[in-house]
Length: 130
Image (cartoon, rainbow, N blue to C red; front, side, top):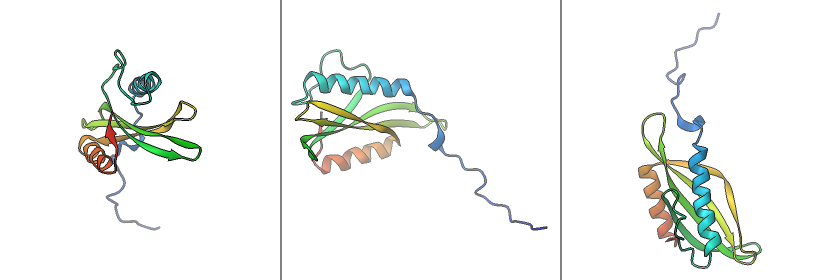
C-alpha cells in the first residue's frame, strides 16, 4: 500500500471555467458592430449605439490583404464568483478594402487593475481611444 503526502494543490479556486455572460458579450458585439458599420473611417460613435458602455481603442494595421484597423473593446463584465469586478476584452478587425470586419472568437476576462494596465500598455503601443 502506497501512502502519499497530503497536497495543498487538491482544491484550486479558479474562475477559468466560469461561464461568461453571453448577453453582455452580445450587447458588446452589437455596439461595436453599429459603430463600425455606421462610420468606419474614423470609428466615431453613433447616436443610440451605446446599448452598454463599451470602451474601445484602435490602431491602423497592415493585414495580409491590405490596410485596416485592429480594435480592442473593453466592457464591464459584472462580478465573478469571488465577488471581484471583471472586464470583458474582445478583439475586432476591420478591413478597409472590403469594408468588413471580423470578430475574434475569444472573449478575455481581466480584473479591473489588469484591464487598466493592459489599456495603458496598448496606448503606449500606438492605439488611440475611439
